[in-house]
Amino acid sequence: MIELDDSKVTCVFSQEVPPALFVDSGTTVRIRTRDCFSNQLQKPENTMDSLDWDATNPATGPIYVRGAVAGGALKVKIESIDLDGQIACCTGEAEGVCGDLFKGWSTGIRKIQDGKVIWGRGVELPLAPMIGVIGVAPAAGLSINCGTPGTHGGNMDCTQIGPGATVYFPVEMDGAMFSCGDMHAVMGDGEIGVSGAEVAGWPTVTLTAMPGLKLNHPLLETDTEFGVIVSATSLDAAADEAVHELVRIITARVDIPADELVMLLSLCADVRVCQMVDPLKTVRFMAPKYVLDALGFVL
Ligand code: CA
Ligand code: ZN
Image 1: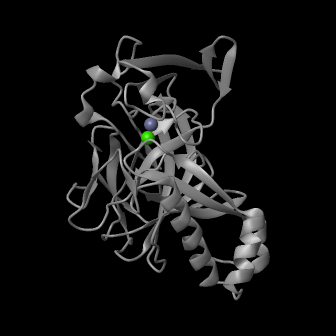
Image 2 (image 1 turned 135 degrees about the horizontal axis):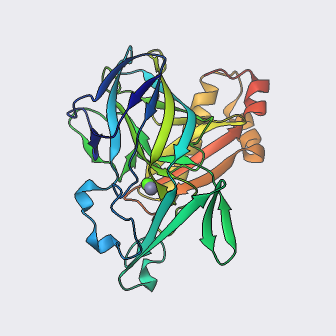
């Protein structure tokens, strides 16, 4: 296994960012990631107005994966996540869903102990580690800041991108140029306050080129579910496209009429919000794998 420290981070996804590391397809990499504030919030007195915003949402990398080609896909298996011992969270004026309630900003700092975030007031939240910012270089000419999600991935803030999950990204340039950061110890779907339990740490991922797989959006596979992650200007638009895209993917591979498939997915697949607080909103549409397996679906 290769280890990559956080001396090379990027705050944009772009084909112009030089590689921090070259690996062969199939390599497992243990990656040091900063938290989304670039570790600037260490005490409750450190508030969002004191942040160097240019340093927020750093992603470690990018990693050039040999064998990944433009027009293909990159498969990223999240093998494990190790977290540091302290989280930061925040909300405030004009931030998140409740930004209208506040003047100024608030920071929460909490410890992680025995697999839980110790909130106080008797509240202890079990860890559900996830990677918020994860993706590859977008199309040529684009430079997308790491706070914004898109077809390249980026700040999708999907609670299911955790240990055991696999994410597939559309590749726009040879090498794919994978990076990740912004881990959360735990987060609610929607991320309504504008942050999760932001934490630095070590995700371990296996990066595999899939040159023959053409994608329009990131795909997500867990032990039990398979689906599509879409970011758009509204939750409605993201959900609409996620549903349509999964229907397109399945009907391209399984001999089933679209009307029957839509009736079936309406009974068993879930539209879920990833996040609703970033410049684009992110939704996933997840179908149970036992259903897709029965249909003979193979990616
Ligand atoms: Ca995030
Ligand atoms: Zn975050």
